[in-house]
Image (cartoon, rainbow over all chains, first blue to last red; front, side, top):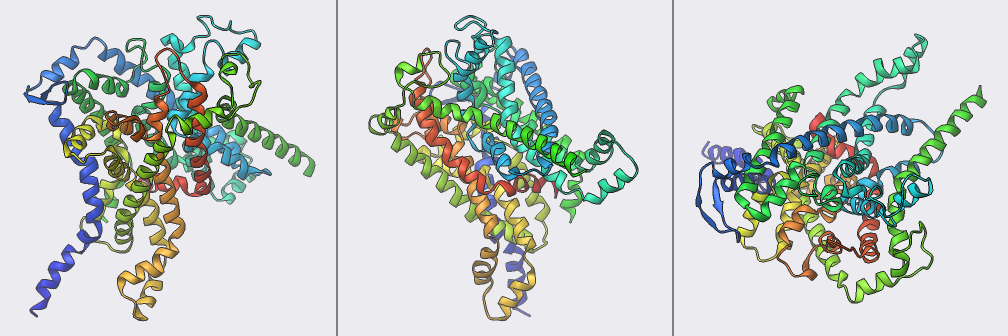
Length: 300
Length: 276
């Protein structure tokens, strides 16, 4: 029939009609900027953002000769590993506690999501204020316990990179706990009760039950939560920005802070740093995808 | 037997309440600081000696905070509207049809969830200033919509998939067109999913800081989003903590209330794409 050809084209184009707007938005906001970023990393860009032509690998050469780069990268590794490991460990405990039945559980769980709902930037500012050497709440409490002298160098936690970094990692863990705990909780709720009844009949202890039954069953939830945390923590900006601005010098900067700071002085070099950061994210995502069965989903 | 159980429950409840209180404690500090007088702010006291609302009133009259709130409302509202308009047809079609490229599309959506604006900040800045849309607000609407699209697609996809096709078929037998079936039968049934996506996107866009800071740097102070305005109170040597936390209270309380509404469904929107 004559109409079938036209109909066929329409049928083929149908998915595009429904998915087109979403695709357009993804291209505009995600794919295009990646292209611009990669191109900028090969350009000489002046202070006002004017492009003064291509300069090959000059930005990368410049970046790799920065004396701050290697310490910054190491700090990023410590930052990500420390924050994600700390978050997971505490979240296991929290999820186990909030999985139990007790009166007022709903209300208590609501309190748990507050650091997730509030902007990370506000949480970081609260801790910056609470760590004020003269009258911050944390220092006031530590002073009453006899642990610090108000206004002393010791009370200036954020002024010393050795103490600033652990405090900021603590804040990063604090804001990552709600999502991680909720992710583990939702995995935990999917386990049917009779599994535990069987384990109890076999006389398994609480710990053995957790290690041999609960952990393997919530593995998918743990993997997803870990991946999302690694990416969030690696890209985290507001905590360090509000608490130390990455200083003194670059002594508390991670690679994300360093990239933002480079942008003030050399946009091309900052783009090169972005490409480096972006490659790290890609590798993390690929490792994750390799460990799951996304291919089967795509083939379906 | 019952007695030991109840002791255990009491201990669990006490531990949980203590932790819940610790989670709230930092945010109570916002209130305790926002109501302090300038003198009280300099005193080493955990609790304010005097109570004042002057931090709030001066913000409103002199600080022009109302403008910043309006800008943030525009950004968060616009981004939410755009994300939903774009996500609903995509989530619906992928839930109902299997076609070539479906998996690839879903993988692309998953990728947008993995790639955060911070990882491509230089590209975003150069692209959107180059587009010359005149105001940072429009750029921030589009960018926030794009980076929250994945959540909306996952949560809506899950809701659409759970609605029986037979319901739609029955409506079409009754003479409804495909579009009106979607609008009048399916969307109302997916309302909880839509509300979840709506609140999540709104809160995320309202809180977003790095791109807002980068793109609105050249804007006049009154047309900057709320988080950027709050960041402006942080000085190199002194910080106006009273005003900062008065503004912070306005920025924080509404989104906490909104988040409580979608608490049960938060996780599925973030992890559905990955575990599917």
